[in-house]
Length: 337
Image (cartoon, rainbow, N blue to C red; front, top):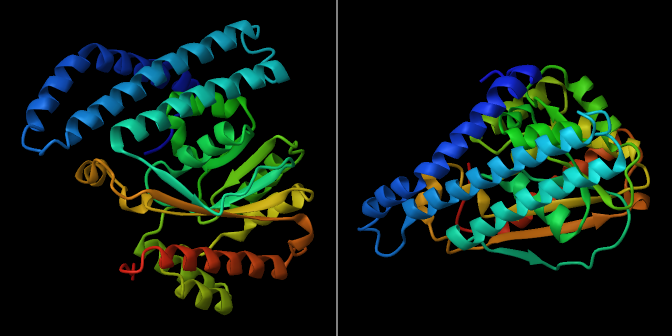
């Protein structure tokens, strides 16, 4: 679906979402009653009731978030002071409130649990977070961890389509973030925008990037390998063929971020469990979630990051192979292809 221009989103889409969320909140007792009837034979799982309640929580957070962002725009002199530090902090506070509410609701209603292996104590310094991309909500989960758990302001490279959500759209465009189209032919342009975003990272900031550019599917995997071979990158194509859970990383954006933030550590993030929750139907079938979301991260200092060029690209592929192996060891019965 084509994203409308920003002016159309502000004057039409955002008010429409606001009204729809208010209507859902007003009619939520009716929806919950219908869900209750539908779930009478669910043996106490109440999956539809839980999902509808999660939708109510989302609608409430969306309505309040849009209202708070509107008030911030008015208080900033109708947008004049939005880029100043006090208003930037206020926007991050709104995002933390929004993310925390959604995460807490998912824990309570869906039974979401997160287990981090070999959790390391946080330490100061700018970080570039490169994560695998899989399942519904992993970007929200990781952003919530960075912004709430580690109290960092987070610059995020995310798909342009996420701007259909008003809170992400409004706050995301007022704070330093980049909205990209991973399948676009303008790869160099997007890499440059990622480098610009990474420049000047402060000690309390993090840049979050998903180098795969999208969730794993067999079709995307085969196309990515074919693309590598077409460009003469036989070694990388062979390495990608050995990956059972990940798409090969797209090194342009990651390399641009490392070059622009040369003093930043790189944090690689692996997780598994969310890839099974790729639709509302899949989530409903598994409520309450029995298995936790398992995660692991590795922090690499600037001295251990290769200089720009082929060596850095090879290094990124080696890390992706390591992450794929970590995932496979925790999903021993499953082979994706």
